[in-house]
Length: 411
Image 1 (cartoon, rainbow, N blue to C red):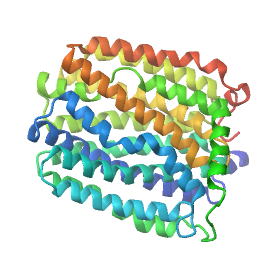
Image 2 (cartoon, rainbow, N blue to C red; image 1 turned 45 degrees about the horizontal axis):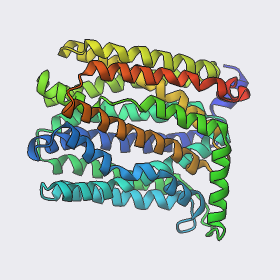
Image 3 (cartoon, one colour; image 1 turned 60 degrees about the horizontal axis):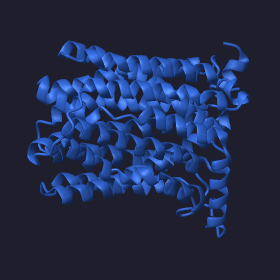
Image 4 (cartoon, rainbow, N blue to C red; image 1 turned 90 degrees about the horizontal axis):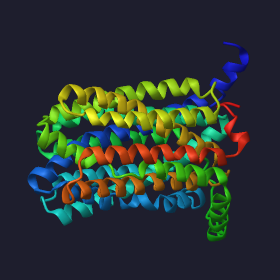
């Protein structure tokens, strides 16, 4: 490795911030992977909900994900105890942990559980948005958008790798046990943020908040990169989704056990993590255009293999393939968003990308669940729609700025 490579890979201060972000993304996503299956089984078996109703529960419960830009505006413009990010993270991590404990303790009533889940997930949204702002600031400071984006997705996959099988195991026990572990992981991050995220307590309330917010929004609306990245995210997530219908197909049709479903999460996460690791290296050699085109083609073709999802063996193979193709589809688009977000609007710009993804994903799963539950659609129709809308992303790429498309990470 020559001197130039060393400077790009390890600039002063980069390692600590990268480790802070890795722990933040990793521990929170282990917590989320742990509760996913147990909560779904509680809704299915104890409350007797069908696929459409479970999909609606999660779509409503994560409503705060659709208004992430509001949290982005707060952390970009309104200091908390003199800091932009530090205290937002500390307080939201604490309140989120408390929320998981309450959700595990309340009676099994749909409206009550939905209210507690939605309130807790608002803290999840603030945590994610604030870490996103820290990530974008670090990425722009050290020219490391590709590497930090790969790390972020890698930590998501690592969270599923650790939390998926554990969630499958914990689904056999009371929900409070699972959510107590999720709460503990959030509490564990508080001292890490306290000691590692150092911010001088000099930030003051910006009296021109709304004017600046308006200027930021106008700047983002005028940003060709931000709008194109949002459109790409929409097209990738837009088609009728697989998530909840697949859960019912796995349990009702194939008769897969809770532990097997948890192990499938491990398989997908492992291959996703390997893909993110490879992207971490390749993004410093391949330009943005090459990364985008290759990832979208691979994801669209990989989706078609769901036609062969007929047995436990094929479930393992296709889950592994999905871990690769979905990671490849997401990484370059988030990389593009991080590179193209205007300075001064880091958390706001990134939160807009995430809001588009979250809203479209929830609506996609609800539409797919509705077609599956009420209109008798089978997986074949959903597979073709998913692959087709993913391929449409290729139509957006020619409209992106040429200078950005030719850049590699660190350049």
